[in-house]
Amino acid sequence: MVLRDAASRVGLWVLGLSFGTLAAVSSSQAAEAPGTIALSVSAFESDKGKLLIVLYDREEGFPTKPEKAARRFVAPIVDKKVELEIPGLGPGEYALSVVHDENDNGRLDSNLIGIPKEPVGASNNAKGSFGPPKWKDAKFALPAGSRVTQKIVLRRV
Image 1 (cartoon, helix red, strand yellow):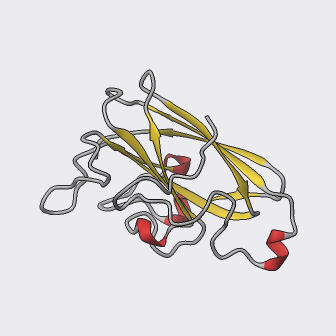
Image 2 (tube, rainbow, N blue to C red; image 1 turned 90 degrees about the horizontal axis):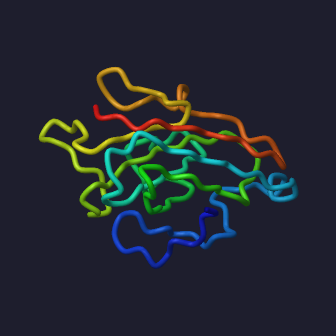
C-alpha cells in the first residue's frame, strides 16, 4: 500500500499537510530527487483498530509530540501486519514512531504514570530505557532518490 493524503481523518492524527507537501524542506532539498520509506510493521496481536504512524524529520518532539512531526498517517491492519510506502520525501534524517491504536480512538492510551497501554514501536526498533526511545537510536538516513526499508516489531512496554 502507498500512503495517500489522510486529511479526512479526524482527531489528533489528522495529516495537516497535503500529500505532496513536505514540512521544512529547504530549496536545495526540493531540487533533489525524492526518496521513499518502505515500512513493514509486525507483531500485531489482532487486526482490531488502526496503526498510527508518525514521521519525524527532526529530534524536536520525537516520539511523544506528534504535532511536531513532518507527517502523520493512519493505516489499516490486515492479517496482523502493515506494509506500506511513504514516497515523495526529501533527503535527510528521519525517525518513525508507530502505535497500534487498538481501540481506534486516534491516540496512544497510557496509564497514570505515562506508560503506554497499547503496543508501540520506533524505527530501527529503538527501545527506551525508563522512557521513550531516543532520536539518536531511531533516526536513519534517507539519501536523495533512495528507497529505505524500516521493519518495526511492535511491543508492549
